Image 1 (cartoon, rainbow, N blue to C red):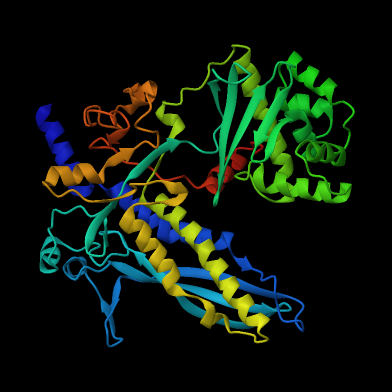
Image 2: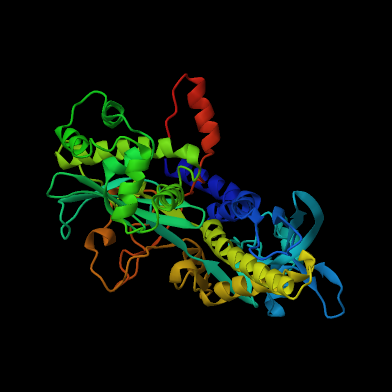
Amino acid sequence: MYKYGKILIQKYFQEQSFVDSDIGSFNNFIEKELNNIIEENKEIIPTIIPHNIDEFKIKLDKIWVEKPKMIEADGSSRNIYPMEARLRKITYSAPTWITVSAHINGVQRESFDTQIGNLPIMLKSKWCHLHKLNKDELTAKGEDPDEPGGYFIINGTEKVLITIEDLASNKFLIEKDATGPSEIVGKLFSEYGSYKIPHTIEKMKDGLFYLTFTRVKRIPIIVVIKALSLLKDEEITKFISSDKQFDEVIINLLEFVNIKSEEEALDYIAKKIGITQSKEVRIERMKEILDKYLLPHIGIRQEDRIYKAYNLCKMLKKYILASNGELEVDDKDHYANKRLKMSGDLLADLIRLNLKVLIGDLLYNFQRIVKRGKFPSIKVIIRDKLLTQRIYSSMATGVWVGGRKGISQRIQRLNYLETLSHLQRVVSPLSASQENFEARELHPTHLGRLCPIETPEGTNIGLRKNLALLCTISADSNEEEILKSLKALNLKVIR
């Protein structure tokens, strides 16, 4: 048995690498995520435009990344390999290009391709010159054939992006609440693009269920559901539970039986959160808040409001069952309720933030020149070094989006095993100075996913972990394909 097990593991590592999941995450970032980020920021509309123009738009059409290149002092460009980047203390990065077009009164004025920066490239990824080279070719390029890759070279220093373990976003979890007014509380982090918005459902002593998200604090959830165009009490009851009658729901419906239209519900919420303008303005602002900040992962369009109402009903049912003791509270430490943010996800967060900075800079430069009475070409106002410098700075210092530190670390090279260990590190965002006993403990769901032994002694025990040797991490599945399969089975899809 031992003999066959040894053969199987040898065969596994001939075809797989320790860092395959991380490399796959980076490849997915360049192939799909970069285009998604551009799609989120597709249209840029300046507020100051020449007086003789009615409408002006700048559109970002597509983005692509070349393979790593080096521009010498004489202006010549050539391919660069990792060993040269290490020796010359430069960054192993590739030019990133974008197609930009300007539209005046609905007619395209100019369209061009421009470089918006240089993107650090992960070694052994599809965009690295070492990809698919054999042992002899790797040796000829000055590389160790047994080197797994999965890291970056920033200013000649080898840097690894540490995998972050976090609670799953877009998943409604029920937990005990020792400090708040209710015994249990329902929490959900809704993530869409650059938004990550916490939502909370709780039951107060008056028997009513309240929803909190962004600046909307403790608003009765029934009113929110009615504001999302699910108005009939019968329908609300049916979507919460078609097979069971909940007394709590009837009490909540009776309390707000006088609210019979969307406008009344929207106006009620607007007054509660302190919007003081005229009724029409209050309602419009409230619609915008509900579209943008309430469950944005479901959608941010007007058509998505009804799906948000259905989901709130579903969440409310789970909360009532848990508060009645018919459903156990969720275990936050169960690995089904965790997600790992790998290199691709971390870089997507970084690019998403810095692209907004680049767009802000572009708008500032455009509007400043327009104020002087000139009409500039978009090509001359895009500063490609701005994005590059900000990415390099985060990669060099390890300071990331949201103020997180230590995301990018200098790879440990004391020995080969320590290098592999560093490439497979998983860190929890919880504070090392706080107790968090349950988060530090070994959980049964860690089996086969995390190493049960390798964690440091001291304050970081249980918070800094390592992936198991045979662990691979799957990417997000394609939602559209799953929905297509469900529809083919004649199932009705309610998001």
